[in-house]
Amino acid sequence: MEPVEAWTPGKVAAWLRGLDDALQDYPFEDWQLPGKYLLQLCPQSLEALTVWPLGHQELILDGVEQLRALGSNLQTENLQSLAQGLLERTQAFQSLVQGSLGNCAETPADVLKAAVELVREAHALLSWLNGYLFSHLNDFSACQEIGVLCGELGQVLQEDCPEAEKERNILRICSHVAGICHNILSCSPEELLEQKAVLESVQVDDPSGLEIHTTSNCLHFVSRVGVQAATSSQILPGDEIVQVNEQVVVGWSHKNMLRELLREPAKVSLVLKKIPVPETPSQTSLDSPHLLSQSLPLNPPSPRVPSEGLLADGTPGPSPAWTDSTSFDAQSPPTPPGPPGVLPEETAEPLESSGHPDKSPILGRKKSKAPHQQGLLC
Image (tube, rainbow, N blue to C red; front, side, top):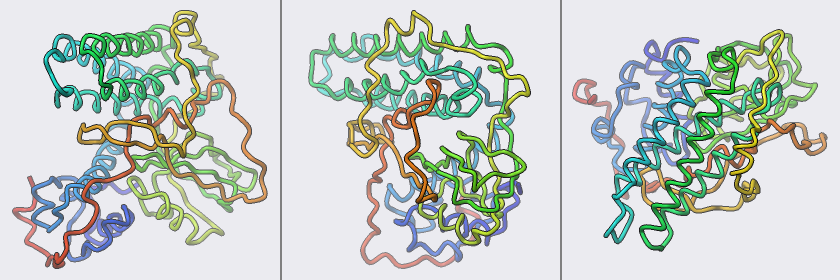
């Protein structure tokens, strides 16, 4: 893959065009942003480009953050770093909450912000555990409780109850999440803890056998592979689709990703982010008696039923539990339930909001001319 820093202004504009439909009125082509400036965008530079609604800024900056993470995390991210990161974030949240809720009519903003950061760490870990190596070849099903716990955390933060009770419930949830992280770090074999993801290019003669789910932060994961999509380089459930026919689709909407995938369906070139499967993978189960004895009911709501959550800015708000999905194989029967290690898709995005505040363009806004690139960056 070409580094984002090396993208031409035309390639940057093409990537921006794949983001949310609410952004399509902006003259991306006139911005003449090269890749290195794209990665440096911030709220102030977007305002200079006449992107004033906060929701629109968030859509662009969230996509840019996904691009940054794609480039940086490949060298450092693995199960150990993700579990350790969530553990440290949970412990810091526990310390913040203790004694901070008293005499507050509403949950303090810094607590809500810290909760959102904790949930983002949890999303990253759950997405990693959705990889084939962890969901099919090893049993990490007990870890799916993290998603349920994050959903409960969002509800507790919004409950109208005595502060002492709210603090007690939050600390109980945090203790449980920390226990799962400790279990991952102490019980997983070293080869699973240290395995990093790789980017792999594959050719697909017919994408109709692929079923793809898109998360609320616009990452695209293969959830099922039919015989039509068989290739010499195997595509596995849990692989993330990063690029389609030379076009990076990280951060794109589900609809736009599918449009690109079906542009030339006879022969599709994909770049996948995947966790390599060893020739002789170990068999690990984290269904420990300690975790199971504390487990919450694992019956999350339907993916299409909204549940309460936290907005990205830390304020309470409605939050759909999941995502868009598409199966191209209209003749195939419904996908049977996966093995015990498969994470339910509902738990992967427990507190993200698919709505975006301030999505409506400002009335009377004129399209911007291409401003001088100096002064755009923060």
